[in-house]
Every structure is written in structure tokens, then in C-alpha cells.
Image 1 (spheres, rainbow, N blue to C red):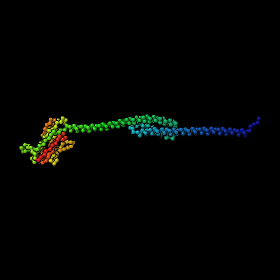
Image 2: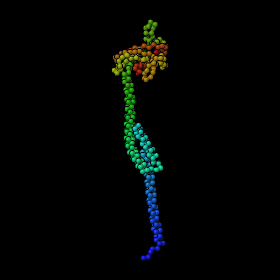
Image 3: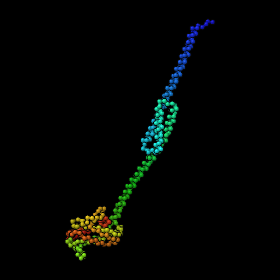
Image 4: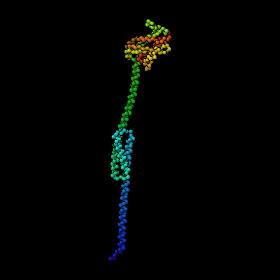
Length: 301
């Protein structure tokens, strides 16, 4: 049997050794490739999860900001809850800004975000109820305002009607004269009054008047005011003697008080002229209770 060539045997061993080395290198390269691929995929996954969580946090914060833009007055408890949520959001933002995060960090952040979502949902529900309550209260307030305006207008109308009615009643209650008669007299030194017709001899008027029957007028004492105008139309009166009639202040020449009994009683009123009488026609007007009773005139030669 022919023996193998020693040289060929050595060459074959070298070939086998190279094959083993190449196979080992290929195995190592394959291991490193798959490991690098897994790490790259894991990095991409972690980075994507961070971005997604950041977006979730931004959405939650935007929901809270939207609530603040509403015209709703928050209770102290709701304000505290909102501040607590904002503090948690700030902590989450800081955590997500870290350079490296473990899967455990991401899982914890996910739990906190889920809790925040539930809080914001409940928070928005409470704000929605507050908005409805405020809207209802505003509607009630506006309704009350409208009713108040209507009631005020009706009250003003009733007050005006009442004033008009009172004015009509006062007019209906006013005393009127059924007749007025004026005579001129000269009072002699002995006190005796003599009827005259000449201005040069007269020094006083006597006004006789009868008050017409009026069942609406209240019985009792009444003040009668007299105004006397000379032939030139000038009122003869003292500067400080005033009374109210026809809703204005007027001067009067004289006044007396009578007892009114609604029985057609005739009354006399004397007026002494502080000046000399003039030739011509004198006019007199009587007033009572703020209204004119009647008027008359007399001519002196």
C-alpha cells in the first residue's frame, strides 16, 4: 500500500484550518450584524415612543389651556387639581427630555399619561357642568332683568296714571263759586261803611261769594286767597305774601279762612286798598286748594 505524501497532508491541514477560521469569522460577523440591527431597531422604537408620549403630553396641556380660555369661575378645589396636573405634566416633560430612557421609564411615563388623560376627562366634565350652570344662571338673570324692566315700566305707568287720577280727583274736589259780587265802600272816621261808586271816595272792596255744592269736596276749614288787579292790570299785593296754585307760586292780595259744610253758604271778604283807587275796572280772582274758584270785576267812576 502506497504511503501518503507528507507535504500534501500538511497542505490539507492548512486548508481545513483556514475553512474553520473563515467559518468562525463569518459567524462572528453574522452575530455582530444581527446584534447591531436589534440595537438600532430598539433605539428607533424607544425614540418613536418618546415622541409619541411627548405628543400626548402636549395634547393634555392644550386641553387644560382650552379650559382656561372659557369664561368659567373655577372653585378653589378645581384650581388646585389643575395645578397638580400641570406639575405632573412639567415632570413628564423633563423625564422625556432625558438623553436615555429605559423601557421601565417609558412604561412609567405611559401610566402617568393615562392617569392624566382620565383626570382631564373628568376635569372637562366638571367644567362642562359649570358652563351649563353659568349659562342657566345668566339666562335666569337676563330674564329677571327683563321682568324688572317690564315691572318698572308698569310701575311708572301706574304711578303716572295715579298722579293723573289724583290730579283729576283734586280738580273734582276743588271748590267753585256759584256767584261773586263786589261792592266798593268808604269807611268813615266813625267806622261806618258807606257804599260808593267813585274811585276818589272808595277805600275798600267787599267781596260776597257763595261756594257751590260739591259732594266730593271734604268738609272743614278752607283758606280762600284773593288776588286784585287794578285797571292797568297790576297785581296789588305784598311782596312776601305767596301761595301755591296751578302748580306755581303766586302772590295774593288777601286771604280768609272759612268753614265749608257743602250747604251753599254765602261768605264775605273785605279788602282794604293800601293805595288810592283809580278810575276804571278792577278784576278779582278767588282761589282755594290750589285751584281757581271764580272771578269778577267792578268799575269805578
